[in-house]
Amino acid sequence: MAISLPVIPAVSSNGTPWPAPPPPVPQDQGSNPTYPGGTNTTGTRQTGPRPEYTQEKFLRYPYARIDDNSDYLMIQIAEFVPPTVDLNSALGNPTITSTTTDGKTSYNVQIGTPQTIDLQLDTASEANKASFGKDNKKIKHTICLPIPESISDATQIGWGEGSLNPAEALGITFAREFMDDPRAALDAVINALSNPQTGAKILGDTQLKNAALNALSATAVSALGGNVSANQLISRATGQVFNPNLELLFDGVGLRNFSFNFEFFARNKREAQEIVRIIRCLKRSMSAKRNAAGNAAVNGVFISAPDIFQLSYRKGSSPHPILNKFLPMALVDMQVNYTGSNTYSTFHDGMPSHIVMTLSFKELNPIYSEDYDEIYKGNEESVGY
Image (cartoon, rainbow, N blue to C red; front, side, top):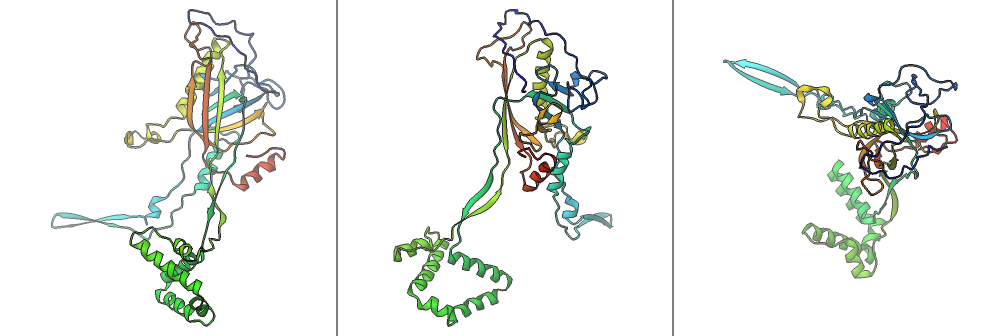
């Protein structure tokens, strides 16, 4: 059962008091950070000190108890882990030596044998996933929001048309062999033309000979700045063109985008404070950091990446059994409309009565086939990513 949002009528800004708050609901204060406000796996209430909400560690809207029948969207926030690049090894571990002659010092920079650059992108991807692992203490914030009215996912992969006509295939083969052994490549062409089977076929057939001459002519004209192709010359002369051998070829992977709309109606002062903290927490987490990795000595030279976000649909204390999963994402766009009802309406303390928030996320890494295998091992009913 999804969490329902109460509709609060428009309230004027001329001193209208807050509506009476609902009766207090016992809150969970235990050590289960991934399930704030609910019961634990044994069904008993959590005990312990109240979380420090002023630090925005655990936030939720509506500010009410989350039980085992509640469906909601959980957003966890952690620091971004960049790819690992060993530049010293890649540059060959440069060394600097100095010599002093007649009071003058000269420096010599020597670079050793360069090594292969190892970006370890997969390692970075796994490290970002691990930032949101079970019982991981690096999670900075956890926000629970109602599942939006419209949820969907779109998976795209890059495919593009590709062609390779006989002249291009011959040119590629010749160029490859020419780079390895120029003399052998020229000999191969001469032997092919002088061969009784292939050479006679090419030079003896008028169409093939004209096609070859037109291809060479078009190449020469293009080298001089003209815009003429071999196919154009052949088509003008014979009404034919080279067989393009057109195919649909795999072109690459893509990154998924997700957009969510949330509406906030503050029912009491405590819930209004929670809404403000949620908006502030998201804005701050998506912003770049001026202090580069905490190094005050290089402030102003570098800026650090914003935090990253792990989204998950939840049913009570467990992941949603059906809905799609997410990889770690970046919050790339956030829009907040403080006049959600298309009119300026606030409570007596200035809190808007209706706020609409739109969040746009983009995954840090593409989805691969092996990722679905990992999901399937844990939950055969899920649609995966």
